[in-house]
Length: 331
Image (tube, rainbow, N blue to C red; front, side, top):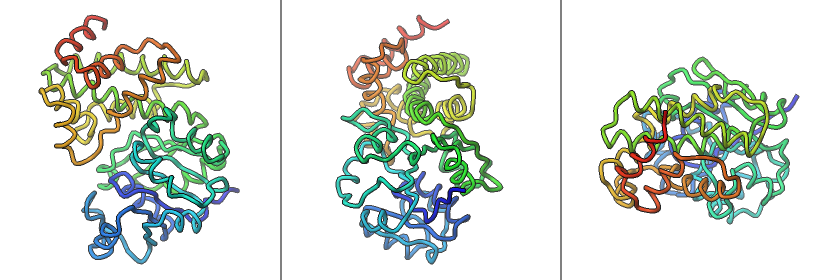
């Protein structure tokens, strides 16, 4: 049986904090890489993350903090990466320790910019990590609800189902139910696309479209997602499973969704820059939209919702015009 060994969290945001809460309750020891020493010192003093999910308290004696990524990677066997996708390359540039023999779990719901790769493929191509040692974590799961111990369902994807199950066992609790899958590519791409569609939902919300239209938008979004997944990774999958449709729905509808909030601001007339400045957290879908648009230039999948969001965010076409064209294409 595979053993995850010593587990470390890489990242200091809200989802990293929620995952740390789940893991440490099972293992009673984790490593935790945070970039800033002052955040670590405040965490130790307050017994909680000073910036995110401040209501979640930890036993500091169960955590080994370090701002040196190399030290954490050296000491730990399973590394859970939970940093925003635009910053992943910068974090890994500091790395001198080999990742090849580590079990890597990516909980990053984004594409590595410039490379236009999902995170598991980035680790595989750049750091020579085998697919058997690469896993992804799928939703639907808002960090805020996990922190409140509201019932949530997570999917662990890995080519090696024994390893997927071992990590799923670490996450399982009274408020976390888990399942496993071998569809790493599908889960990762869907986690990127659902952020794009959540921005679309937010834009329509900002434009005062109602629930009736939002339902049609989500129905068309899951069809668009299914077309893309089947093009890039044609296997038998049920896009109605929670890792695909469930993650899409929670991100498109929930007030916890930063991508929906970002989209709502755009729909209300904010510029991209002003919306980003007002938000305290990164809306991954902004970066994911551009990356997915570039990726789809190779695949040529019919993706009108992606195209509409791209045109609004990057081509500066007014939301009213772009969404009107989109609504005319729906049935």
